[in-house]
Image: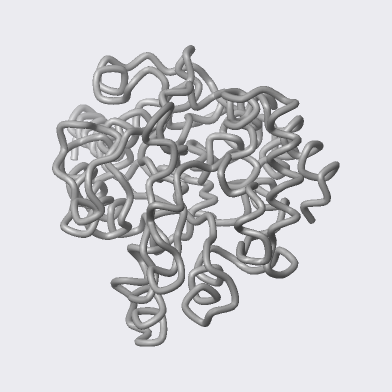
Length: 340
């Protein structure tokens, strides 16, 4: 082989190597959502784009602390959080970089994303009142505020105040009702607990079914998950529970989001943005609704059969970022009221 031909062959090999590297580009995701809840969607993305995806899962706060410690050396490109409160906390820790995307801005309502593009809501979940239709007449239910009424004394099951979903609900109460009224509501809630706060949302549903309490606050996707569960005990329990949409006469039911942002020191920024944009496509949003019983972030995407079966509801239009901005105040208020 002549030197000229060898040089041409070497150049071609180099270019082929770069092309192979480009096709084999990988995204590294830190996710507070369980891998099984997002892995099928990520596999669809990889099949469509040729971009591999690696996932590390852990608790929200663990991931935030890990990213702080890793700094510029982090391998992470995207951080997925299960609650707006934690998304705000990550943004306050300067972990995200701003993203400008006409696709994301067009498909995600302004109140469900950070104003500067630091993070974006990807799915919606509502925190509703679950109740026993055998022991509770729907006409006696009305609002979150109503649960502090003495008629519910000894009848409410709850998760602990350490649960971010309850913290975000309390933050929304502060934003809508003010601190003084929220303090009174919290005291009333605590006085009405049927047992010390414990367990997860599924446990609250099971306890209602078992007659340990009559009402509880739960996220809708847990109900959907139990309806589709492979465990017959879960299906039997959720069949004994109904849901009520609170505050339909005024501001609407409290909603939250799962969402994500591109890490400040991401090595694969373009691919990361491409994944976020893929997550708001028709296919992805429909998959979330069918597989996870989460409401699409897009109003034009059809709801799954389960979601549609719960009927239409009015949602609180509060900017979702307020849930994180008021998180510390909410936690202190819950502690003051004795919500353990």
